[in-house]
Image (tube, rainbow, N blue to C red; front, side, top):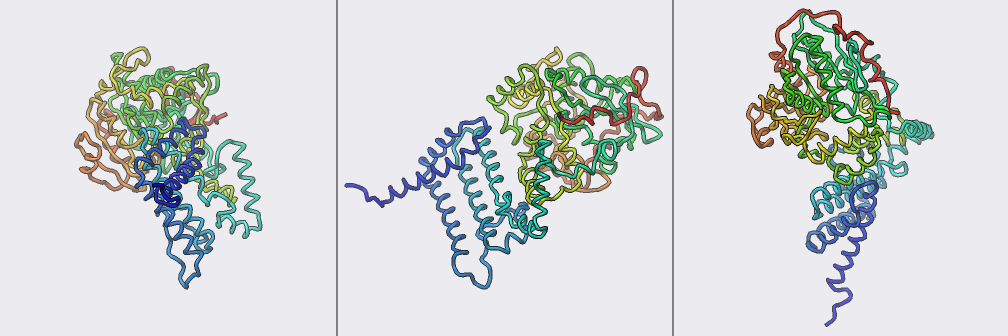
Length: 579
């Protein structure tokens, strides 16, 4: 007995075909520059449809029903009161807050239809039965596609931009084109009014001098602000993928100034913005000529056996690696260790892990087989894509569609002032840390000629993570504490990777969590943690003081012996721009 042409099976087949067509159209653009097989993903998704047809039909039927409901609310004669929204944006979503999106039914419809489609795609991706890493990548690139397709991003469908254009008689369009041309010229989207800042004028102005330099870094010593200082200095190792002055922005939010005012003699590593001829420099070079050199010089200048050492982000990874090298060679140069939003264990690298798999790493190794540099703009775009709505599309709309100049914001100025990295060093880093997580395994890596073991680091450690960090997930930072042997004080600060670190004590903003228990499960640690109001800076200062040694009279002369004042802080290296 033959089936009816309009029977249930035929209807399902038509829906299946429609699903496949929709998936092909949506997923294919995500494969541009992505290291996964789009055709394979489409096959896996449609295979999942066949295995769980009921769930897929539920997703589709809900989407079509709500789109029809939305259409009907505008197509049918309107009552006195406007129709209730079929879907509301997330409260944190700033894109559709302006009244223009609700005052005109056409634009209101565009926004709601987009939000429905975005939710449909997210549900489709969530339902995909894929290998975990592939699914993570699909989820990330689907979100990039969703963000990019917002009607707020296009002049013809953004009522705010159209209103501004009308109010300015087209001047906003001309300004927007000029802004776009300027940003194309420099290869980056402007996120702040760059004319408002200058390194050495109103950023990185803590008094000091460069007392040592080599091809990799300059070492800055800051002038004391107290009559006496701790005998042990504090050596700060910032990330090498950005400029050091994230820790010395303006006087009111300078972590350097805070430490100096509490009696610490502070030394800062200022990494060089690497030129092409340094493209063969290695991870070992950064340890030897960067971190180890800084620790050695600071100890010699202050005439002490040990210093207090602090590393931020990848600076923490470099610092941990360098201390492990020195321990393997029989030295013990650090009385304490502070790690700020850094990773030693790379078992979960968060959304950055989306970019790092075997094909990607192998390609970068091939790209840099003969040297060369990884341009800072590439890394900056990667980090911005993790929060594309806030760090890309917001500025596309503001700068180009509305023709406005971004507000002056020191954090965002720093964020756009990136540095080049040696290709050889970068390829080693992504393979051995991000991809293979080798640093956590005792003896797995040989650095500077010796096998290293983080478990030999038994100095007291202050490990700080930030709860909303999208670059160093706090649970990953917590996992790193289990690799160290000494007493660990783990602190969880509010906010994200940068704002959670740059949280001046004088502002008394946000909060942080403390729990002396060393729980295996980070979530259990958090459940037992107590919240404390204000900045973690004051807590860290109290923690560090006992490791500073005796108080000694401060000296007005910076450097000593062969380490003399080369030039005033902030030095030349930090002012070099990416080529």
